[in-house]
Image (cartoon, rainbow, N blue to C red):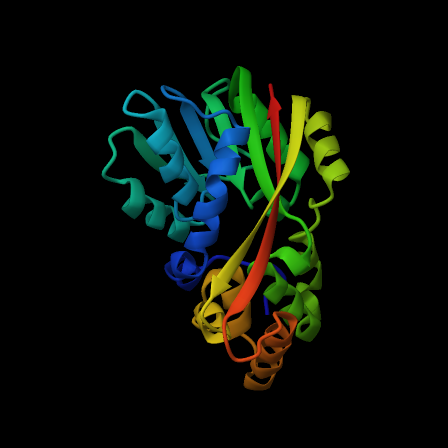
Length: 264
């Protein structure tokens, strides 16, 4: 069992089915925090399948440009499929802690639920700042707590059965504290840092509708789940089902994002 939560081909394949509605709901808040506007050149780092990048593309218009970048080649291919029709969009495999772009290349950098996965988030923010033009803005979103997360609560349940994943699972929530997140951006020398919190309740017809994508390996949680023994999978499923208060009908999942924006 790997000690990190990863995004292999199977994880990317099921990602949209599991999370598209969540990302799509919160993307406007992220783009607003970055002050995305027409004509801008925007980098979406840790872009996943390109959902936030697509939303940004709709704002910057034909005279702007959006690059969707991710460390996972499988995720980048998904972004290519989503954005490939647009002449002013491009995709790239990039390490957020060592970006290949020249200094002052972008008007805005956004990172949706990615920064907490960086081995060194401060180094990532330093790279974001480096590629921003003077006055350009960064915006990041992070999870707050397990009880208000969509899928990362599953990672914690899995970690109780696979201790080697405990550190990686805990890191998912490591930047959720408002003061810590603010301090991180300020140490990275961003100015006018603004922190907001957004929550939304997602309603699904059944627990099975919620959990099925993870049973098929969607996302890092799904990849970790399918690697478990049959007995452990059963225990994790029951733990998550109980946590969500399933009574056999619809289920409600409260999801909360902390968003931070700052200016170079």
